[in-house]
Image 1 (tube, rainbow, N blue to C red):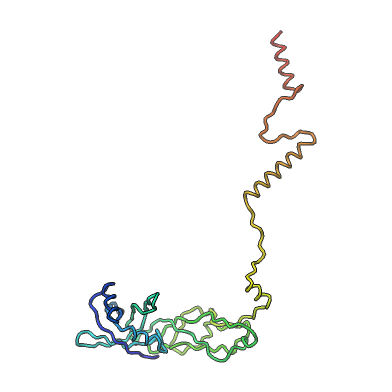
Image 2: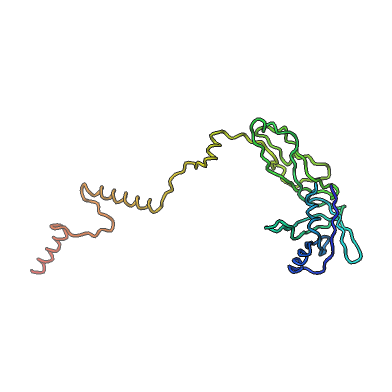
Length: 263
């Protein structure tokens, strides 16, 4: 594990105005957290960029030299987070975490695929890098810059999982052991590749319009009712008002009532 020196100065005030003043002076605000306390600091962004570009990157152990008045205090820390300007890419703020070299910490480390080209790739397969970093737990002195993974033996259809990742004793991986880190997929056929490049949509059924379906069902029902009523005219449409037919029973009843009244 690489150790990097980082100079810092104590500051008494916080806020957006203070941060803008620091940036105009060529420095950025930072905060050191640890053991239930926090310290307001300012650092030079170039020193932080140098740390990030080192082999250990964000996981480098930091010899933080804090200047406060006439004294200089050294603490061991690690970079926890930093903010960048979305337009310029410059670093705006940094969060540091003080660590105890005798206590295990948790952090994420990158996975580096090593070795020759996988056998499956030589046969036309496609290498898929599914997991590029894992969370581990270990003592600060054992933090690796990265974890090496040799994938040269992989054939088409084979994978290397988290459980297969080699780590030295004292490092515990906290990820799901069944997660695939790298795999070699079978090559795409020319027809499938042309289909993907052309963006040909899969065959789909025409969407069914509910209103149209109800209308068609109503027309079908009316047609059936009309067809059933043609032969003997015995069926009547629902809701149709009955009318008396000439010479029918209703007319005979009315005639009887009339003759009874005359007598």
